[in-house]
Amino acid sequence: MLVLFAFILGAVIGSFLNVVIYRLPAGESIVHPPSHCPSCGHRLGALDMVPLLSWLVFRGRCRYCGAPISPRYPLVEGLSGLLFALAAWLHPNPDVGLLLIWAFTALLIALSFIDIDHFILPDSLTYGGLILGLLGAALWNEPQNWATAWRGALAAAGLLALIAGFANLVLRRGASGKAGWPVGLEHVYLAAAVAAWFGWPWGVAAAALAVLLNLILRRPLPLPDALTLGLAVLGILVASYGVLPQSVLESLWAALLAAGAVALAGGFYWAFLPEEEEGEDEEPVAMGFGDVKLAGMLGAWLGFGPFVVGLLAAVVAGAVLGLLLRRRKLPFGPYLAVGGWVALFWGAQWLQAYLSYLGLS
Ligand SMILES: [Zn+2]
Image (cartoon, rainbow, N blue to C red; front, side, top):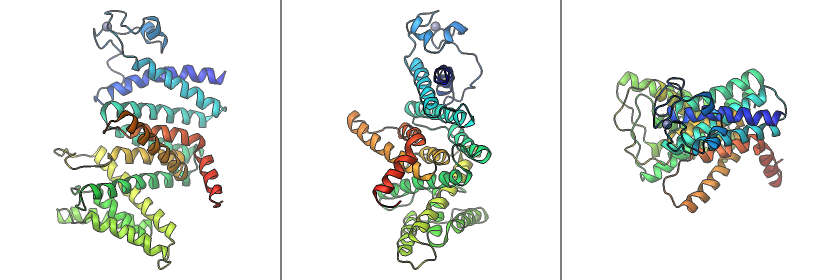
C-alpha cells in the first residue's frame, strides 16, 4: 500500500518537478502563470495534467493544437514515481525519515535535469538542499545526526573544492586563477593550507582575516594558488612524520573542513549577494563551482564516508558513459546525484565492507 501510494505521490511531485526544471533556470515564477501549452498557449485543465496518463491518453500531443509534447514530461514523472516507490520499499516506515528521503529524491531529480539542460546547478536548490539536510539532522537526527551532517557537508564541499583547485592549477600550469572580490577561491586554498598545519578553526580564521584585509586595503591581497595549495600538501606530509600536534589524518581532515567552510560561505556570498561582474568563465575551469555546493548538500545528507562512496560511483559512471557517448562536455551533477542517491541507502554498508576487507575495522 505504502509503495503504491509512494508511486502516485512521486508521479504527482514529478509533474511539479517538470515545472521547476523548465522555469527555475529561466528565472520564471514556479506558480504563475498557470500551466499552459508551450505551442498554443492554451491553459491546461485538470485532464491535461494527470501525471503519465494524460501523455499516454492524448498520445503525446496537445489536446488543443495537436503539437507534440516532449516525452521528457512523462519520463520525469515516471522516474520520480519509481524512485519514491523504491525509497518507500527500502524505508518502509511512513515517518519523517521517509519524507526527508522523498524531498532529497525530488531535489536530486530537479538538479540533474537542469544540469543536463543548462550545465548549471541552481543555488536555490543546492543551498536549499544543504539547509534541509542540516535541519533534518538538527531536529530529527534524520537522515544523519547533527555532527555527521555538518562535518559531512564541510568535508565533502572541501574535497571537491580542493580537487578542482589542484586540477585548475595543472590546467593553468601553475598560474593562479583570477582573485575573487572580496572573497574568492584563493581564500578556500588559504584555509586548507593553514588548517593542514594548525587545525581547521585556524584555517577558517586565516581566510576570514585575509578577506577582512582585502576590504581594509581595498585591493586583493596576492595569494598565489601554487603557494597555498603547495603549503596544504606540505602540511599533510609533515604531519605524517609526526612533527605536528595533529596526525596525518587529522591534518587532511582539517584541510577538508576548513576549505569546505570557506567554499560554502564564499559561495553563499556569491550566490545571494552578488554585485554583477562581467564574464565569469574566462579561465579554464576543471569543475563548476555548482558541483562543490552539490557536494556540500550530499555530505550533509550522507555523512563524509558514504559521500566518498557516492563520489567514486559517480566518477566511474561518468568516465564509462563519457567514453561510450564520446562527448567532451558532460555535466557532472547528474552522476553525483545518482551516486548520492545510491549512497544514501547503501553507502555506509559498502564503506563498512571495504574497510573490513582492508582489515581496518
Ligand atoms: Zn497546444
